[in-house]
Amino acid sequence: MTKSKEGIEARVERLHASGIIDMHFDLPMDLCEKRAQPNVLATEFLPQFEAGGMGLIGAAIYIEDRYLPERGLQVALDQIARLYTEAEQSKCCVVCRTHQEISSALDSKKVGFLITMEGVEPLGDDLDLLRAFYELGLRAVGLTHARTNAAGHGGIFAASGSSPEGLTPFGGDVVRECERLGIIVDLAHINPAGFKEIVDLTTKPLVVSHTNSRKFYDVERNISDEQINMIGQRRGVIGINSVLVNPKQKESTLDRYVDHIEHVANLIGMDCVGIGFDFFEFIYRQWPESKKKWMAEKLTTPHFIPDLTNHSHARNLTRKLIERGFSDNDLGKILRDNWMRIFEELL
Ligand SMILES: [Zn+2]
Image 1: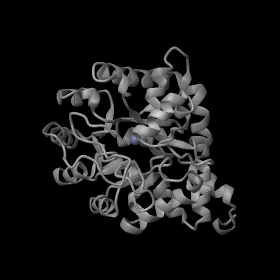
Image 2: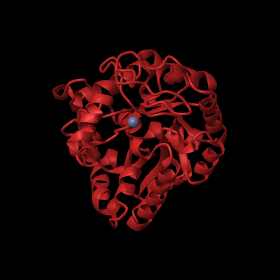
Image 3: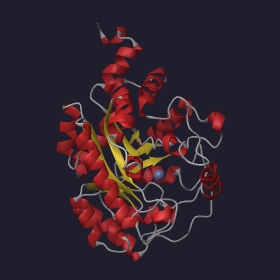
Image 4: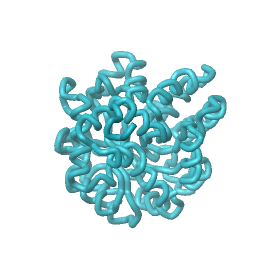
């Protein structure tokens, strides 16, 4: 059958056959919270990864407020330990540290994990610990989540009002050390002043693992056209987030998700946009109402896209991109190849 006669389903199948890449998922936290249960990865997550044709997932270490400051380091180590144990037990997942290991995982049809850190709270203010985490497999670091820490300030979920201050001296040291060690610097969540400072401090490609365009959802946690251009000038990659595509729930749809992809590609090219789903519904669902209320007051209410709430839905996105006219070449870049270029250049 010629490609032009190939049906949409066959096209989706072919595009997912080499494995797709999502650079942000709060997996280690959930595995760690459920450590009393056996095979959580294999039973709760792997079926979804396989249904979605996932090849590599950025597995983010994130420390909840209730553990800070005293237990940040310990919980981070527990999360990494749990990820390695569960990956080994699953027999189908593997933690990757290099471009070569990621390529091998994709070739062998395993699901690879790249360990990332969302907020450097586990380091306290000890730069030596960054090296220790690197040895444990850490390969991408975002300095902050929404809160302030020893490295800098997060962007808030409002159109203005984030701290006007940039990084702390420690934050600057972490960024420089990431570049030296070969850790990807991730600008997701950092406030606008910190974002600019990181761009000025670094020379290599920068990424924003999971974010959205402020054109469609104007909060400082997302990124402006000016910031998108800064990433493009460095030939970085921006991963599009699924939970902040629109301030309204009813406008949070697959089409609106694709609008963000198109917007970034129109500004800085098809080589600089990828996926950072940030699927969060499975955690949110487990929360008591009081915690959901806390999140709505302190951060925001996440708006889940009904047919894009977990990895088993990944093919819905590919179908939508095909429907919207993206070529196979574009799709390959968005779903996998752009992130692979970053790994090849930096890891
Ligand atoms: Zn995040």
